[in-house]
Length: 197
Image 1 (tube, rainbow, N blue to C red):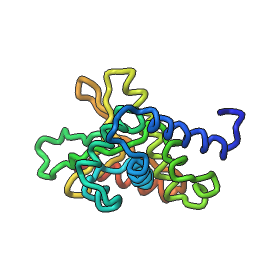
Image 2: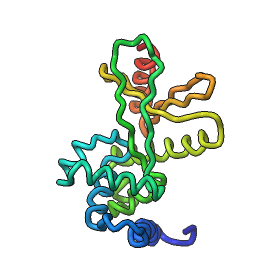
Image 3: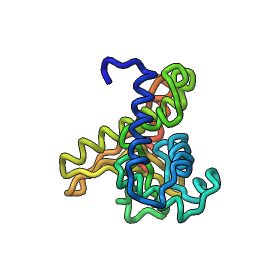
Image 4: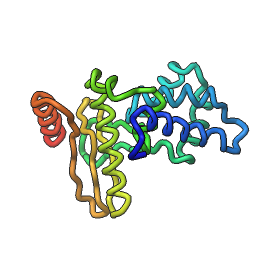
C-alpha cells in the first residue's frame, strides 16, 4: 500500500475486514451485527472489555458479544491484553478485565472512516490510537522473547499503560504519551504513583 493515498489505504483496510467476514464459514455471524461491535471497539480502542457497556451501546446480548469477540480473536483482528498483578500484599483489587486491542490500528481507522485530518483535529483520539499502536508493537516484540505484556489498573485508580514481565518475574512499567510537555509531565506523575503504590 506504499503507493496508495490515504483514502485508498482506508478502503483497502475496510475491504480486508469485510472479506474476512464474508469468507467465514460460521452461520451465526451477521455482517450488520459485526459492524456494530467493530465500531464500538474502534471508538473505545484498547479499552477494558466491559461487556455490559458494549451490550448497552450496541443493544446486543452478552452472549452475542462473546460469540463475536471469539470470532474476531480467531480471525486475528483483535487481541487481549490482560491485567497484571504482582503486588501480592497490596490491599487494592486489581482490575481483571482484559483490554481489547486491534492487531492493526488501521482496521479501527478504516472502520470509523477516519482520515488524517480528523485525527489531527482530535488530538485526544489520536493519543488513544498512538497508545494502541505502541502496545501492539511491544506485544510483537514480547512474542519473540520470553516476555509478556500486561496493563495495570486497580481499585485505587492507580494505573499504568503497559507492564512487560519476563519469565523470571523481572518487569518494567511503561506509560505511553503523545504530544505536549504537559502530557509528558502528567505521564511522569502517573508512573511515579504506580511505582510508589
